[in-house]
Length: 167
Image: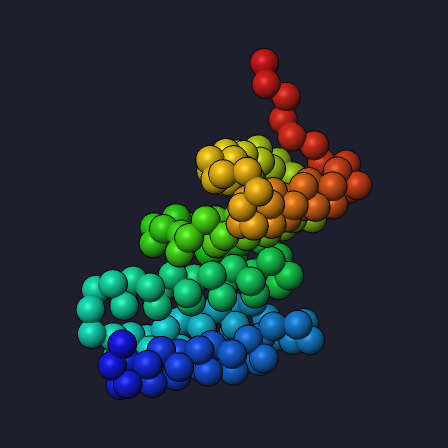
């Protein structure tokens, strides 16, 4: 990679880190709408330096994932949270780890805010789990992903949320 592109991606890492520090843990008093608006402004700024369609799409995916991380603790309504999910669905996942993380955060959010929509979250978890099981046994990504899903399932089960029965 050329030094100029390395600097470009380093700047993206730094700018996203600054946003995370502003809107991540400890920023409970910042409304979700404000954080989302700031992340979208950051996205617009970062897209100015993108040279290819792949770079533009990747930046959008990174920002969508960042917004999801803020939405999990901050979004209070389905309208807010669903905006994030629609954005991620439209852009696609960065990788399987991103898909697992999205499914897990969605299930956790649903367990606290909107249990009526939990079957959708369970379907996302099942899809991610199915994809993880395609990875060879013993591979660290498979093990980490399955462990993360098992942990989230345990957390939501303690809240009384169980997978829908198939009938």
